[in-house]
Length: 590
Image (cartoon, rainbow, N blue to C red; front, side, top):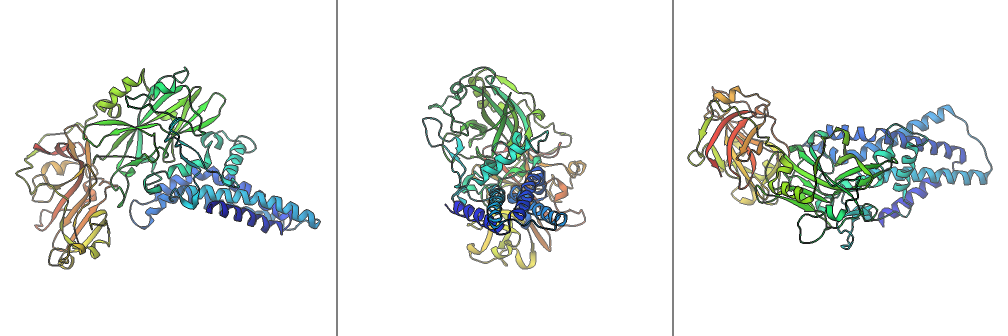
């Protein structure tokens, strides 16, 4: 309701302003706004990706990522309107006098068009901001609740009284294939432009999760198909997965799809794609709105398709499952502590359509740049690969470690070297910790990096007696454990040991389990006579030894621990720096 009222007031207000200025001035403004929108949309995608890339992972400007896709459209649009209007006034300094009735009537019509375009661009921009899905009461896309046809499918829902977003999206889509046609028209890549921004906000907490990622935060590892889109494979057959109930599916227009094929994309997410801060920090959260497939038929018509299921590791270590999007608010969360998280997203492609591109939180990956698909004849064959996890991991891709000179460590006996604990190195007060660290309701550290004066702020003598006023622990997610590895000067597997000295400074710091899964260091604890530094960034791993404080053989006051989040229940067998094994744990860390 609020969005509807705001749109009506804006459109009518802009129309009135230009109505009183006369038909000629209003017409010039209409043309300026029309072309400004075209230019803004032409550069929108590239500019948005530039802003996302420029957004830091922590600190004040980290919010830039969450508004990048909206700001990249609205701000350039306003600038282009001003520049084009200034240019028009310079080239045409005079005005044309018309009859009063003509001035008002023509000015109102041109002003109305101006209002619709300007307000439409604003609504499109706002829909791409990281805002609650209930913001101003407008949800252009939402879950179908009809179990008989396909509950949980994302379909068109609300429409504004004056559908400015749909009008603007349709206008520029037609222009991109007509008056302002290009080789890569907007109509081809964004056939439902008015929906994509809101779709990226569909996430837990009414849109609280991240709505954008960098192109480097993921990669398409493999593609597979079930059935053949050229043939008439019934969709009911494609949606079978051994579940107790039959899954149903309808497309974005609420229409059932009778025949087609199922196509799956295995996406491996880098640590940078995970959530940051207190809410779900260190875990990957996905929904069926944040991933969409663009398909095209032989007539060049494009359509947006949302996934029907996601395949990922289950909460039980080493087990995998296929999770249907068959109900509202189905969100898939990574369960373990692996640095890189593989997931597969499955789509129903109607007969006669072929995949054109996959969008991962608005980042477009053309189908031409993806691996050749693996063909499964039946869903049963696919399900066997799901149960073993091979559909995500493919062939054995374990890192080949250089084990010459590796140090054997007994985790049970060498407690000063390996610890399974959430306790921080030393106590600090909550007031001091909040200078660089984010704390949750239990005063556990969830994110950030902080430096503390050892003499004034660290230890029991400086921390308050009350537990409510001091920080003692790190926060870890469900199904995760925190492992500390002592890499100080005194440690036999420290950075000053022979094997570690030979490893590259920019190689990842790894714990490796018995299944070959890797867990990169997500922080460190450092302490000397003067300073204690805590870094705990579950959504951002260390790039290597170069990200840690320097150690010296001439000092005896330096302590350094690496922090790793690992999946509970696995067995950790090695500590490595890149391909160089530093320690082998016998028995494994259980």
